[in-house]
Image 1 (tube, rainbow, N blue to C red):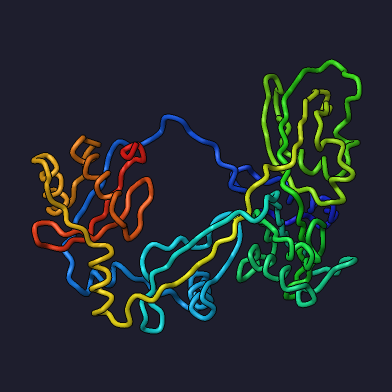
Image 2 (spheres, helix red, strand yellow; image 1 turned 60 degrees about the vertical axis):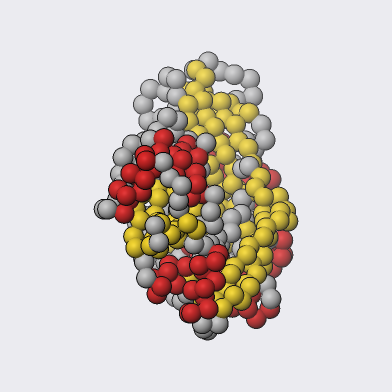
Length: 380
């Protein structure tokens, strides 16, 4: 990003930071018909020591997982909330010499609208109504830290999506407004507002009743639409974007919640602006059940919990397994592999999802660590 010229106003800086590509906020487009037909399957012989290492994890101090483990050990359980779990446990956890089996339960506690948090460097010149980072409530400092890199570049700009808990909204000074924050001598524009989806479609050049000229729109509406209009021939133009609306901008907007005709360079566009989709905010409760206080005891528990015996194979299945042991099986999906994949997925995995996973398996008296990757349709 190029730095603004000295003549640029703060409003123009704030306007530029509002336009964010759809992919930047995690709004993904589904692509139909694109999938792989190949699979990867390997089985590596393991020792007792390697079994313990494969089946357990230890986390570094300061990580989210470490904080969850400490909280659950000290208080019997640790609860966090959000749109997705910060950690999806599969393997056991080792903490201070004790091995724990981790359980996570979830429940929906609220339905929220996602908010955008946008931070952009303005420079070192003092501006009116600025606020020092150290004077912000703890919740705002945490949010600010989520966006800002460790060493902020001179013209830093970034935007993230975030769900705010009710308590955070009450405590926040930055929530649903625009603020200038001073951090390490640099001024940053910080805006927190609702995610709004905006769709534009060219409808012609003929004047329409109640149309609005782009230049006369409120600042918030102009900011969201900036850079979206076509640079060339608008014929058959249709596009969508999203923007950040603070409470003040929502109250002034002429686009939100309705269809509006906007005139830009003589061309007329139908504009629809809607609040972003509501998302469930879930509560995730982690509990840790101690299962062993030594590597030897944990090995016994792991064998009972994870290790399963692979037998009763057909000739075709046996050929796939032998290939997996002898350098790895990598072919297109076949019936023998599909039946093996379903059988593996019926067992408790070290970790697994619809595209594969890792298991501990005993085959012909030998223990193996199995790693299987495949298209999701294999399990259908």
